[in-house]
Amino acid sequence: MIKKICCIGAGYVGGPTMAVIAYHCPEIDIHIVDSNNERIDLWNSDNLDNIPVKEPGLSKIISKVRGKNLFFSNEVDKYIDLCEMIFIAVNTPTKTSGEGKGMAADLKNIINCAKQVSLASKSDKIIVEKSTLPVRTAEKIKEILENNKREKINFEIISNPEFLAEGTAIQDLFKSDRVLIGADQTESGKIAQNKLIDIYKKWIPEEKIIKTNVWSSELSKLASNAMLAQRISSINSLSALAEKSGAKIDELSMAIGKDHRIGNKFLNASIGFGGSCFQKDILNLVYISRQYGLDEVADYWHNVVKINEFQKDRFSQIIIRNIETSSNQTVSVLGWAFKKDTNDSRESSSIAVTSNLILKGLTVNVYDPLIKINQIYHDITAYLEFKNINQKNITRLLKKLSVKDNLNDCIIETDAIAFLTEWDKFLNIKWDKFSKNQHIKNKPKIFDGRGIIDYEYVSSLGYQIYQIGNGDNSIN
Ligand code: NAD
Ligand code: UGA
Image (cartoon, rainbow, N blue to C red; front, side, top):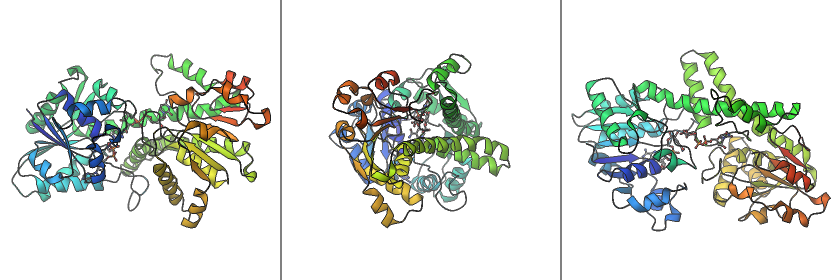
């Protein structure tokens, strides 16, 4: 029976997953460690509104387990040594330099963790890969562990990828569709696998716990994300066709999704998927496929990302085409998070769309219920730097951006409103009240990138609307 767990990485995965294990396994002490002191301080904050990951239900669980059997610390070595099972839940972004730049996963954090675990351990450890990793990473981790270890100890590596989605993380962790545990098919591998199964069995029905070899588990995670993203790119590609042909994408999604072999999930057309994982995981899959000489496979998956870029650009161009860019007009961007109910804006489509608008000289007001102003400026700056825009121009462009702290201020005087995140709050805009004081000529144009506006009703109040995938659009 495992009694002590250490998790390296106190992020969107490490925080919620360990909180849920701690909640279901009061007999296990769990220490989440991170090299980012500021993040650890926020997790330890007395005021639960300050914890760094915003997820429905998370702060309630933290309030029940923190200080009892869940602890946050920056003493990485100490807790590696103390615990029998070490989860690695550090970030694995796309490489920004060197071989595989822009495609391969950057394994720097994983390599550092492996070295640190190896050097700090004085007893046998089970290492659990929780981060999303290229297939056969366990091999590299094993090599680093063996080459750096100081004591004669055994390291067992198992793969246990995480499938939670942000915004529903707690719900997903409580009622997982499946828990995947890949291990070496050796005696010691199977023992380690069973120790992790014993933990999950506390709340996950046994038939949902899948045992595989390590490589199937590592690859299944990349493949799952690729399949989900592929559905979004499929429906988004069809949204462009629906607009041209007079069809409606929501009717298409409904008709397609009624086929139980296809199913109705992940068929919402949008301005493109965001989030820290879909793009990076597919690019990684593309890179791995090419490494194995499978160019056709690589090209197939690369198109999922290309359609996503096409969709973000297509949406930006529709706004630019329909707003007078020469007379300092204003666009109100509603939503910065990559989806509702999260404070995460990594790879959010709002970043690319807003950048395209300010680059064309438009003024942009932004409102998001959870993303902080500093984060919004940071996201735009990083994006423009990535596009090789110099600092002087970035400073000039940022003057075109204004972040509002409430919805009303953002949309009160504007030439266009663009819905980029599907926050519930945006569904409750009182259009009749809002439209009362606006002369027909002054009504902002509406660009609905999430299909959340009641098109018939809002049109009836005199607004011109572009809605993603709607063949009836009055603007296109
Ligand atoms: P994150 O950036 O939110 O958190 C990672 C944390 O690891 C950071 O706080 C960072 O400071 C810490 N860290 C990095 N290197 C470290 C080191 N050597 N020592 C100590 N701490 C270190 O990342 P995340 O969103 O939690 O994602 C983590 C992994 O899980 C990624 O591989 C991701 O692909 C995968 N994943 C993420 C999600 C999600 O919804 N975010 C879902 C499933 C899987
Ligand atoms: C996704 C997967 O759903 C998780 O299973 C996985 O664990 C996680 O990635 C990961 O590996 O990080 P997440 O990115 O948090 O989770 O959120 P999703 O709900 O998948 O949404 C991703 C993006 O796709 C969002 O921008 C969302 O708005 C968009 N989306 C989603 C659509 O445009 N249409 C849809 O029908 C569904």
